[in-house]
Image (cartoon, rainbow, N blue to C red):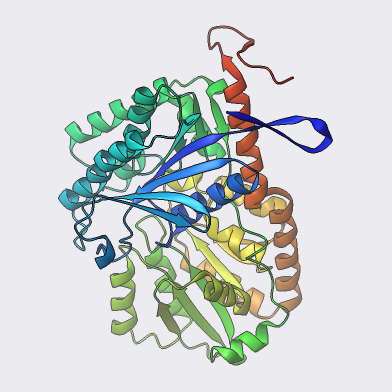
Length: 438
């Protein structure tokens, strides 16, 4: 820790943070963007951050040639020191290949963290996968510094519910490791209230848990002046555009969205665009081919500057999930990106996401996995452009106030600084001051 002069003559704590994440740019995805936005904003706030991450390989599972025959590579990514380490990536997404993928990074990232000579104040390990926490814990023990564990997915519970993890032995091992993190870390950072309650039920003291939400980069994701110009640029003319941009995952209810496209295939004024990658993408493409869904365009992951264009040319954005206990705790990033661009959403996710939709007054909620209700919502917004505009404006204001990436990074900064100043006695009621700034 270093003290540097700040405004008003008050000295400010500058933290040296070792940030371990398996997912990071240039790979694309919600996890990658959260990691980058948090690191970038902490750096902007004046802190020193070193990232340990894997060699790029998403979504194809193929490592670029420049990393071949290497175990580690140091880079400067937009001014941030990044240590990339070897990972056993594979185009085949089967159980064994995933286990090798996760644990190879756990091993190499641990060595990468140990090798670093700089003195760090804390290790921040973000999951999923769960194995990243082992890297953070082992590095923190060896270096004698604080360990902070971030929970973005309810692993292993989510994997069990989705049927991805069935072996009882592996479930017990994963549960044991999860409990180890909760016992040994100085703080547990969660991304939703549902995750908070989940961790509480695991027996973790509430004073150890903090919520730092996902959000949107409101400086990058913002409304364009003329969506009709973008429609013409990309060849959509005066069509009413319904956009899904995100992961084609098992939890995201993709079959229901395809059913919506089928129900509206005779509507000449409505066009669907699905953008992203994931395990359900092949099935979506197969359905488009089998049912001749000419009203659906499916695109691969595209750069941020172009994805912003697609949000801005859209008339409404879809945010969906399967009907399950897991979806109750979801707070999808794509809803904040859409709102940040001033777009209404049709939300088929229950729980906390629905609560924020109601507060924001920025879209229409429908039952998860109910294609008919989604169809009715689309038709309602099609004939009510003023309502679309009102929902979009409300969403933008809501994100600016509550869910900008900058606001969430500032919250994390306060949590980490307070943790370094104080050690909380979990058997008492008062924190013990261990360092004081004069």
